[in-house]
Length: 216
Image (cartoon, rainbow, N blue to C red):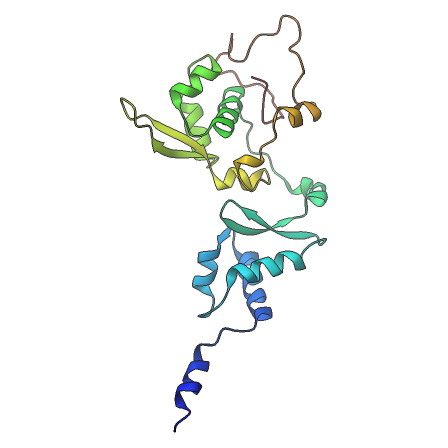
C-alpha cells in the first residue's frame, strides 16, 4: 500500500511552537496598533496556535524592558511600567483637555455605557458638542449601542486606545475611590465652601489640569 496519505498530512503541519513565538513577536513589534489573536492566526501558517504562542512569549518577556500586554481583546508590546520615566523626554504634549472634557471622559469611563443626558445629569451642566467631538477625535471614546428608550439615544463607551494609553486591560481595572484617595487624587471630605462638580462651571473654561479624574 502507498504511504502517500501520510506524507500529504505532513504538508500542513504547524511550525514548532518556538517558531510560532518568533512570528508573534515579529507581528507585535511591527504593528502600530494592538493585534487580536484572530489577526495573528490569520497571518500565521495553518495549524498555528497564536494564543499559546502569545502566552509563552509573555512569560519569556517577564522582567525585561518591554512586556507583552493585553489591551482589551488584543495584544501589544509595551515598555515596562517602571521604565516609563525614560520615555518622558520623547513625549510631546500637543494639547490639554479642558476641565469639561476631563469630567466627561471620567464619567464615561466609570459609568459606561452612558448617554449624553446621563453625562449632563451627573455633571450638573450641559455638555457641548465640541467636548464630545474632541474625545471622539482623540479616539478615547466611541459610540455604543442605542438605548431601548424613547428617542433611542446613543451611548458612549471608552475605546481600546483609551485603555492602552492608561495601561489598562479593561475598564474594570480603573481605580476605585479607595485607590484614588490613597493616591491623593481625591479628598476624604470636600473642603469647606467647595463647589460641587459642575456648579458654576463654564463649558468653555480650560483649566490646567494634570490629573485625569476629578472628584465628583
